[in-house]
Image (tube, rainbow, N blue to C red; front, side, top):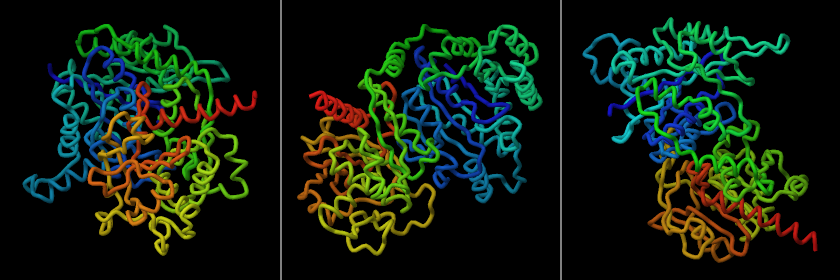
Length: 541
């Protein structure tokens, strides 16, 4: 069958959860046996979010094929349980860059380059690029808010595309805010109406209106929206706030979102199988234990900077019926004086990735505290590197040990620049990015967790463990348990005799799923549970 397209736009205000609505729909369609892919178009002019401040933009999500993408792609992968690609995230910067390269190459024959048709044609061409041979339905989210100047070329491209492929093959879902006035205790539909009117002015009639709301919408309000927005009342769907993110697909199933979409696309509405997802949500809803995990990072002001790590911890908790309470620790504020007070009551310590020297001494202190006090520790990328620096300083006795990224003058550079990064000048898209193989040592904790010798993890780094120090580290108890197939790059470390002390150069959080927790996060949370259980048993006597 021809590929069917579902576009998702947002109206009234940003931050409504278009991505979660789109991802929920993806899960519901997949539960009905359809092969689904997803795509995000971002109106910002950056080529990608790789050089953007995490505190401003949130985390950079990395795909298997090495693209630095918007964090919404993480939601997509976690909900539909499919790996996406560099073609799944398109920015205005990429679109204009491509058009300008063609112009410089002479592809337009000396003609004037314009938004219409050149920019819109480039956008339309990218609607196809994320598709595989098996794809049946493509869900495409357009970032920003309808009415923004930045979004207009995308809206026009959608209008043209729908005309090209036919309305039965291309529908539009508009997610807009239902405004509640506390003073009068009234729900107001006018902002939704005006948002849809703006779409209509631009030549697009939405097929489904999703009302983002904190309160139930009655039939009278749905009828009103139906009348003024020119959609059937059954195509006015409420998106109520849910207690837990992963409840969203189940909530949207109750609202019959997938039913309405399939009807609009003229596709068979098969009976969904959501058993696996329902069981996962049930485990999330009803944990039988709680563990406290310290997240020691430099971007703790914005929790979205570590979104995938937070979700992966949640997944680890689901796998062992444990609620994970995160204690956010600003590594810049962590010092010798407040270290014990901050960390003595936690059941696990996680140091995530990052760049630059800000807050790294606090990370080193956290790694030392975990090592000495036998607290489960998971170090991700920079978190692994700082654990190695700590070990080199306090076990090997190299007081000035450091990464050359942070202290180029160090005489003990236990973390060095990767050789292929030495002449790199540009920041964006130049790191070691994407999925790389790792060979695990048999008998290691990591090998036990993964259950196989060779694994694949996604990466985003420029520095690596200095091989000149590998032998010393290993002899003193920091085992190199994972390397690249040629044994040159250190990928994973463990500390012998520790309940759980694991560092990985990769970013396992990007591959964790709510119904399939990543082995490292599953093992880490279980180790935290075991620690707490043992302590409670000891207190009881």
